[in-house]
Image (cartoon, rainbow, N blue to C red):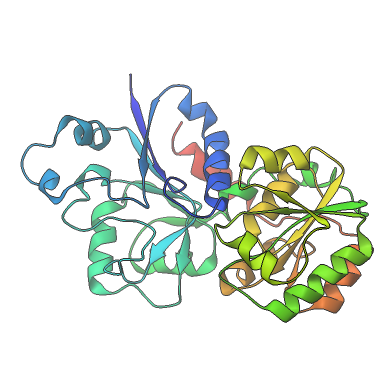
Length: 322
């Protein structure tokens, strides 16, 4: 049977947002996956030894090397310095042979620094020069074009399901209950405490979902949480809450997008440049975390869900792999 490689950005991750990305990738590639044997290769962990790039590949690496397609599955994977040990893609120039020819699928970039010489050389070795790559924001698009790759800005793969038809079915007025998130690595205790006060003012019941590994510890540092129902870091348990009549409000981007995919009224609080770069994609469903006045206005008012993506480009990107 023909093989397809999914470079898995969720295994080894401390952020359940990557699990959301992988689930959405599988849904978008479902017609293709029906005809291929999928092989999952983690990007966060070291998958190959340097010796595997010299001489004959061992059978496990050969199966990956010989796959028909290899997809890099979303998240902020592109870095300006692949020598940095904190990179999300744990690969180097001397052990990357099995994944050469990989195609980006809704991938974003980290930081504003342009790729250095080593990084350009590595990407030129790893990434396909045959297919168009899919990136999720303008900075990544510019990077790829400047390095000579064929590229499309399709937005994040998690948003590809949010068609105008689906968005039109999402409620505009608030529910009585809300599920919210915080971000452990972007702490603003005063702002987030005020945010919780707003949620308590407008919602009768609060649920908190742990998307990041230290999100719950951060929540507890903000004060008494005895009135909040804690949802463990499980996508299935998060989805179970989303099957009830709730809104989503919070700083976790993919938690908010996933809530919209489940037909829930959502407000995403932007905390970094990555999220700001995607603001135009969801003009009514995002607001700066520090703009508490606007947050309160949107919660008590109406939110018309609108997602601005180039659906033609998404269709063309998928069409390469028929």
